[in-house]
Image (cartoon, rainbow, N blue to C red; front, side, top):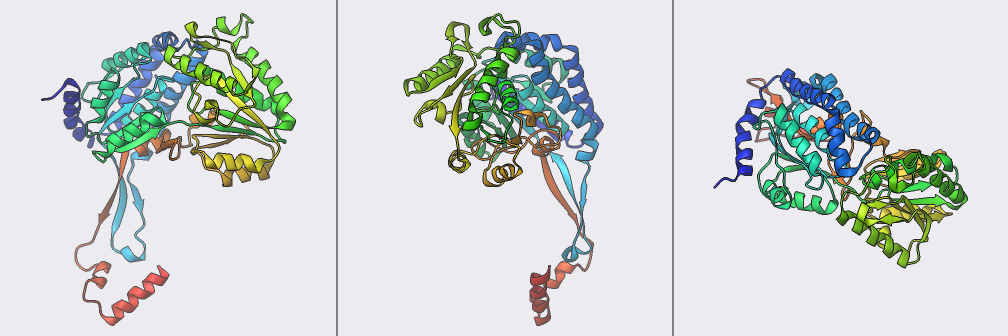
Length: 469
């Protein structure tokens, strides 16, 4: 017996087959409709996100709306080029053949978005999905109900349910969706849930894109401009209350830069998140933790670190009833502390001073590969050493988090921090099947040279080709 969710999935089959032969112009029209809706309903988007996360208008415009419209504009400008069949050369061994790569839609896709950037982390993958010619079922996070409702209303106003639709709900609905044989699943969220998604997808051999997280380290070496580093890290870490998958998670700072970095960080926290000096707890420029469960988790991590000897360099105040935790910087972290071993995902950041870079590289290489690695250094040799001797989803030198919206770079993790890439052309490819098409001539072909039985001269020719070609 079909459930409502299964019926939605089944009803998209015919549409997914139809979309295989639609024009690129029709895909662009759907993308343009999405862009027009977003630009027309900015106030609705702002209201929903402020309700869920107490985000400021400027922050919402910068981190939720701009990335989506940028993704749409990129697709509109380049979709003809991306979708055009790519001719490939035959080479000596395939003389007489004509071959190309055809980019066909994967089919029915599932997109599961998290709560930290609930609008753009749903819409950016959707742009790639539509650009590649697929249908989609969207599952927004239940932890941001106002934004979830907004996404459902937006999709219902824009698209037929057989093309794009929304399923709201929590664990039960997600589990039912994951039981279905989708052609592709795009999931953004925690590594723990990502493993569940991958396990479910494996039952149907469904391809997946997993945008996960982890602990993204920062290194500030002796050549760095500590003032510059503090300003950039303060913005990247404490925007959206630290609830950003690519935010700096922990810092190694050269001991010669420690005092300047801490003093500068304190100044920039005040300037960015309490510009009117009303107190961070009352500032409209400082976001809130998404819910009580996450707030309590963060406070347990903070208490655990303090109980094990950590020192508070900046901040530390909190009010759980208001989902408020002050931007906090800790030092003297014990190796066993949860804050040193778990993804924090909040406005608390541990710091360690160092004198020798080698143990820092060793530490990074013994941990799960991070989504991002941030290096503040003006030393080209150090930059090259970190690039060559560490592995991460992305490496950013002398800045943080800005790689996410770069129009021509792939975004994604590696192993523990994610599988697959997204954004722009890379997102289009993720939602496409790159199908090789080979057209052979009729009659004699070079392949026939090696039909059995092989004569001595053909064996000699094969041996020669093995060495040369």
